[in-house]
Length: 138
Image 1 (cartoon, one colour):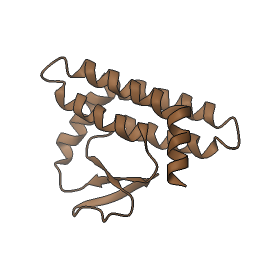
Image 2 (cartoon, helix red, strand yellow):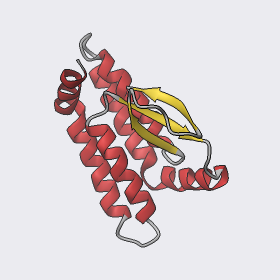
Image 3 (cartoon, helix red, strand yellow):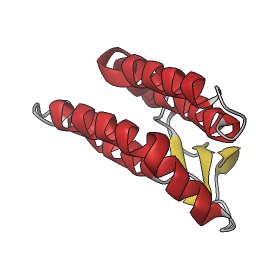
């Protein structure tokens, strides 16, 4: 079922959102300071492309202040625009009954697009790494 969901997601929303993340990552990697943000964008592009069967966990073993600073800069650079893209995609997907689960997944990704630092994506079914707490599953 996950594979069918991922294929439908890829066709309906995943490809376009992943391209948005890739574009944001390339733009951010132009400067030396933006490379960590570009790498985060590339990681989220993979999740936006093929989300089902994955879980997002919060890393509690990391420095919270540094993560908050990274999330604030991320929000200004590209997080707001990517989250708006997910919200618009989610609204369009929720027009039909079949698209509602995909719209809900898009809304979850919008929240992650606002503040990705301090979070890690793991495959569902694998034990969460030590020092982490499960936030959302797809």
